[in-house]
Image (tube, rainbow, N blue to C red; front, side, top):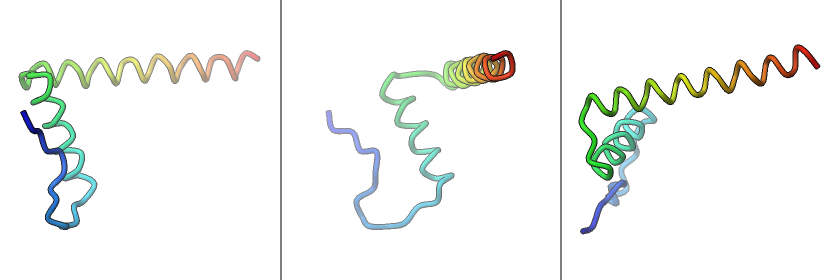
Length: 62
């Protein structure tokens, strides 16, 4: 099975287009539904927030 993430026609794409293609590639590769992608992005945001708060807590306390 051959998967293409990038179009090799030499066209330029915006950052938003790249983000959409990357999300679609992840969704197709792992065979995720739209709801599963929503949960995945929510968990990623939660994890990022937890890590950011721990880093800030470390710098404020020490």
